[in-house]
Image (tube, rainbow, N blue to C red):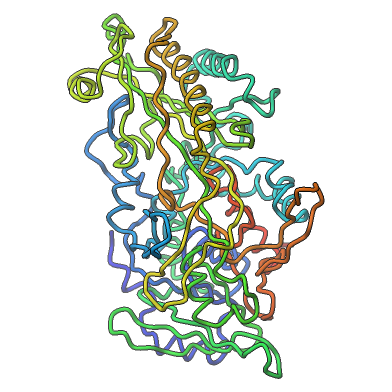
Length: 559
C-alpha cells in the first residue's frame, strides 16, 4: 500500500501543542473496533478527534481482501488467511505461573485486530443480554443498535431482507432450504428457539453494492473508514501512529478538586521519547486499546485506586471445534461444481446445562480451515468408509473432498481471580484460568453425541445418501486456546446483575457506567471488549459495534 507518512500527522510536538490549546473534542487511544469505529462516528458528527495508535500502517483493509495463492472448496486450507497473519503479527502476551496458556494478543496496526477477526457477526442472544447486561443497554441493543451495527459492517449491502443473510440470493434456494431443514430436524431437541431454528450465519462483508459505482469493499474492518478520512485529509480526524500511551495523569481519589484526566503520557516508538499531551477544557479521553492493553494503561495510571476491579475479571469463553472430511463420490464429478456449496448455519442451543452458539459449516474455508490449532479429526472415503487420519491427509492432497466443521461457543462469567498484572511489562502479563470449560466427562460425552449427530446429518447432505457409522462416532471436539480469536473481555466491566443460588438478582456496580464513563473521573470513557460484563456465547464483533454506536450517540447525539 502507499506510504501513509505523508498523510498521517507525524510531528508529535505539534500535536502536543494542539492538545494544549484544546484543539480536540476527543482523544481516542486505540484504533480497532472500539476506537476506530468510534473515531469515524464522532468525526462524521463534526467532532474533532485525535486517534492515537501504537502500531503503524500495515493493512489497507481486511486481510480477506488481500491476495492469496488459491481458493478451493473442500481443501484443508483457509481462504481467509486470518490465523496465519494474526499468529505472525500479534504481540505476545506473558502469563503468570498459575495461568493457562494464552495464544492471542494485541495487534498493533491501524484498525487493530479488526484487520484479521470479526467476520462472523451473530447477535448476542436475547436471554444472555437480559441476564447479564444492564437492562437499558440490553434493550437499546435489541431494538436499535444491532440493526445499525449490521448495516455498518455490511456497508448496507445485506439489508433488503434482514432475516436472509448472504449467501441467500447467491445459492439455489432449494439447496439452502434442504440443508437447513435436515439440520433442524436432526438437532431439534437442542434448539432454544424452535420457531427460528438454524439460520444462515451472518458475515461482515459487502457482497454487492446497493448503489451504482459504489464499489464493493469486501470484508469489514475499522481500517477502511479511517483510511478514507486520512486520504481525504479530513479536518475532523487526526491520526497519530507509532505512539504508545504509557499512562494517564489523574489526581488521587483523596485529592481535592475536579477529578479528570489531566495529561496523557505518550512515547514515540521510533525513539522512545516521552511527551505529555495536556487534556484541557471539555476534551474527553477514550480508552480503546483492547481488553488487555486498556487495563494495562489503566493500572499504570492508578485507576484501581478509584475502582478496585480495574484489570480484574478477565475471561475468554470456552470454544470447541471438530472437523470432518469426506471424499467426493466419483459420480458427482461430472458436475462443474461437484463439491457441496459452502454454507454457514448457526443457532443458540441448550448444551451442557447452559446456552451455546452452535455453528456448522460446510466447505466454508473459514479460520479453522488449515488451522494450526484444529486439524481435520476424521476422514471418510467416497463410499462412506472410515479412513485413518494418516491416509486421509494423503488422500485430501490428491482427491476432491467435502469438509465440515462444528464450532461451539459457550458463555462465561467474569472471574475476579483472573487479572492483568501490575508489573510494568510490555506487552502485559495476565493470569487467566477458565472455570467454565465444560471439559468434564459428562459434558464431553454430550459434546461427542452432538458432534456425531451433526456429522451424520451433514455427510448425508453432501454425499446425497444417508450416512451413519456407529462403529466410528465423531471424535470429541478440540478446546481452543484462550485468546485465540480475540474474544477476551471484562477488565473494565459495565454494571451487571448476578443471580444468587437463591434465585435473587443482586446488582453489581461496574468500573464504567452504562454509558461507558469511568466511575470516578468526569472525562474518561472506555470503548472496547473490556467493558463486557459477561462473555457472550457468540463472536463479539456485532455486540461491540452496537455498543460503540450507542456510545457515539451518547457523546454526540445525531439530530
